[in-house]
Image (cartoon, rainbow, N blue to C red; front, side, top):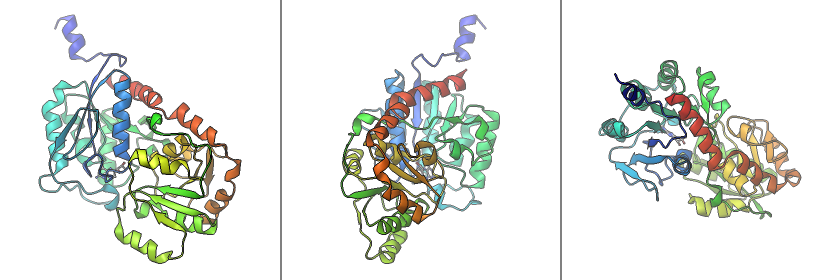
Length: 369
Ligand code: HBI
């Protein structure tokens, strides 16, 4: 085999060269539906971050996805059940005409057009397919450990393909056996979409999928104890849970403001005195914490999971004892000590698209070496 052939066939590309990248989205919902939760914003931000670094990006997502300004291939099929609603020993299941299966069959067909494929699905199938693809496959694992089947296949991928697994936080990585080999890419946001708001209105905010693991009831109880209005934003994923909250807190000063676009959300979020983050699970990251800080909004969060690595205690907000409503209420009374401009600065230094693009470039460089 001649020298030049050897070089190109063994893909020795310094990552500073422009790569042709395929990003495969989550099968739980079309991009723009809100059903994909944080990963919808993450796919968009990472696509833009990589384009800004000079790479070429194509996104593969379920039919009816919307992603303006980025080449998008839409694939039909039935949506995947959300992993966090399944039991720890749940078997791997796909619906008939699974969009997950269809996405990855299409990825297989077009893989040779790309230098690297980046998977955003938290699903057994793409993790399993790592060994079957000729184009290198990287996985940005979007949640902590949830089921034994995905834990097992992820451990196998970590073992066979060093550098293949990326995470959003050390706390999230620590829920897996392969934490030491994980690439902590944190996350990155288009901060030009968020306007710094130096003064606050008369409410605090809670943002997220309305589902039990997100602990909304604690935020309602803390806002009631601190006698401050609470505005709730996000898609109602679990209606039984939501109706139970309405019955449990008939007098509480809270209002549901719906699932807003980033543009509308940052306007409402920017005037909040604080963002309350009350995860009852190990939140892998906590995108909303950055969105809040980008607007100058301090974050009050349980000392648990990703938010505990984002909030700079006493500087950009408060980290409190997990599951303690009185601790949340107490932190709400101490907001005066937090400088809102420090929140914006932290977001710019650590979580800009440029910072994220650098972290992704370093990751891909290791993977492709
Ligand atoms: N569940 N099966 C499955 N696959 C995903 O990609 C997935 C999920 N649940 C939630 C989710 N992705 C996103 O909301 C992440 O951002 C958490």
